[in-house]
Length: 209
Ligand code: CDP
Image (cartoon, rainbow, N blue to C red; front, side, top):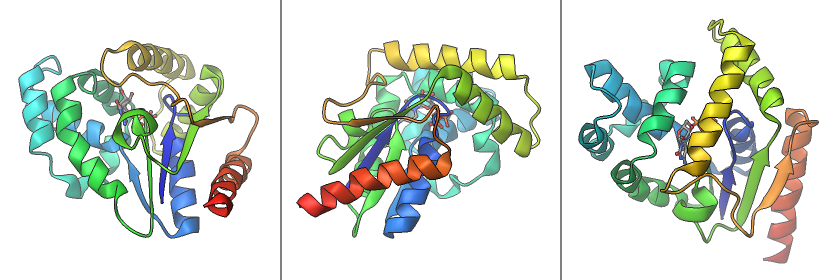
């Protein structure tokens, strides 16, 4: 079974994806980390993010065994990932890995921007997780504070708006809900309530198949 979770920045996809995967005994891939890792390679080398060829090469030769590196989750890396993720050759280079990940048994949860639309269009369950930009900025602010990054709320809100705009308007694999996705607005839901709502969608699907 493949569960595809998409949605805008800091909508809680990662937390939800991990929780669903743990509950169901499935593997979980936060695909944003792949783009963050490509951006990290360029930044470590001092290569400008505008160098498309270097970004494509970094994506083709990416070592996926270090996706749990804590620095990937920082605010700067999210912004940088959003820049290089708009390059088609970067996306193409990461596609096979994501699809193979989705093919493993007994099931996999993948979260990102284009899982239900491009990476796994035949996913058994598609969820589109959203919340207002203000609520997402509030959550990301808390998350970064816990990580020891004290970025102003207004800065985070501006970053989220800019990233949403870039992710939704890019030519390649723009952020959007798949036609057959169930949209979950989590603005007024805490993590537990979001998990229960998502699990209900999954269980419903399992009953029918
Ligand atoms: O955690 P957050 O939602 O802030 O970001 P993320 O999911 O780690 O993604 C970082 C950036 O990578 C996004 O702004 C997207 O531009 C890009 N991304 C993408 O294009 N496609 C994906 N499947 C996942 C992330």
